[in-house]
Length: 137
Image 1: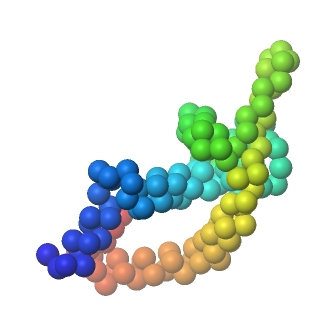
Image 2 (image 1 turned 90 degrees about the vertical axis):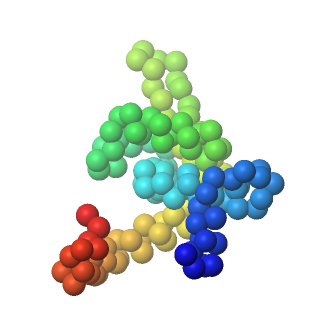
C-alpha cells in the first residue's frame, strides 16, 4: 500500500484522540455534509417552516428521516424548534444565527450540484461504459 493511501485511510478512521484537530472537523462535516441536512438548511434559509411544509418541500425524505435530521440540526444549534400550545400542537422550525451563517455555503453547494448534475451523470455513464468491471452502481 502506498504511503499516501495509508495517510488518507488514517484520516478516515474513527478518532481515538479527541484533541486531534480532525476529530471536530469531521464530526461537523458529517452533519452539514449529510444530504438531508443540506436540503433542510436550504429550505429553512427561506424562512420558518412547519414540519409538513418541510416534508413536502424535500422530495424523497421520509417522516422519520426528517425528524432525525431536524433533531440533529437542533442539537448542533443550527435549527430552533418552537412548539405552540394549540390543539393539535403546531411545531415550526427555523435556522438559528449559526445556521443562517451557513446558508450561503450550503446554497453554493446546492447550486453547484444543480448546475453540474447532468455533466456528472454523463461522466458516470461514460466511465461505466469504459470500465464495466469498475462500475459503481
